[in-house]
Length: 250
Image 1 (cartoon, rainbow, N blue to C red):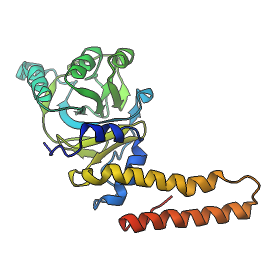
Image 2: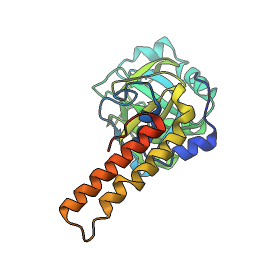
Image 3: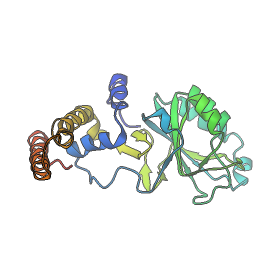
């Protein structure tokens, strides 16, 4: 498990911004490649009305097509729930489905959503399937998944508390994740301390410069609008570079 760096208050504040906005702040402070740390394959948010979610990864691997797992370890669900219950929240259950790209069964449904919500989990990210969407909504359990599925087949935890790979991205247990309808961002531990301030700064920087210039067009010619936008872009980039040493982009 990574060390818990951010307070609950800071997590709630980060939850107020969408994931692209959080990314904009993150890219200013990180030493990681800004083409990484988020989903490389397309995701689908089945509860976009729930907005953003943020939490620490608890990881599970499943293989709904294989009935042998139930025989090999009939206690696996209880053992997996004990692991998840032992981790402080908020938590996001990240489930790798070994059947990908097929969906022989859904790991998630009404029962699983209610159980894991009671264990302090706010939602799931899975490259497999989900079902019982209305009931999952009623449980307040957000689902970002690859697809929907009617049945559950042999949905059984195969492994847990291990590295998983979903939507082309590897995730370790305990990593902090911010997610919404756009996808998810896995925030490296060394970037967490500065993240909230960077997100605030870059969001304000956008609003004060390029967005303001783009909206203030009344009575201006096209040439004047373009000139104002170019100047605002320079101001935006300069402010980011002065603050973080990186050229901001818009």
